[in-house]
Length: 118
Image 1 (spheres, rainbow, N blue to C red):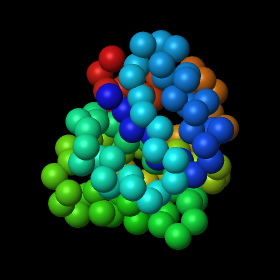
Image 2: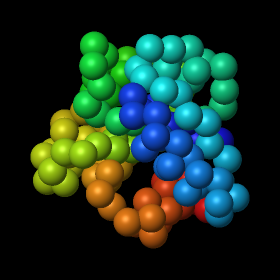
Image 3: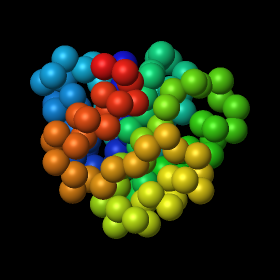
Image 4: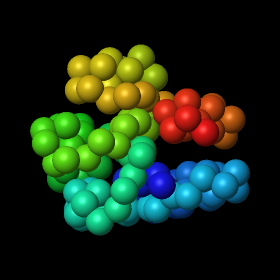
């Protein structure tokens, strides 16, 4: 199961639908608040995490996840940021992967499959 955390409900839902269309189960958590509780409620193998969210950024959520919440989920940063800047941010904060939101559907699926082994 994949958890998508995005404050843009429309984009998050589109991402969820793209995954579900190829048989990959995903849940959308709209906005950062409640995301850690969602992580604790489910067994997620991957978290697709928006970076630019108000009040609680994706980077802060990543730091909390990596700081010992007990989650073994992989994390992919997913943002409208420039790809190079996003990659640097991902490496600096220990994300497993990154992908700009402008990436094609096939790039999204390829990255998710690489991270989940599907």
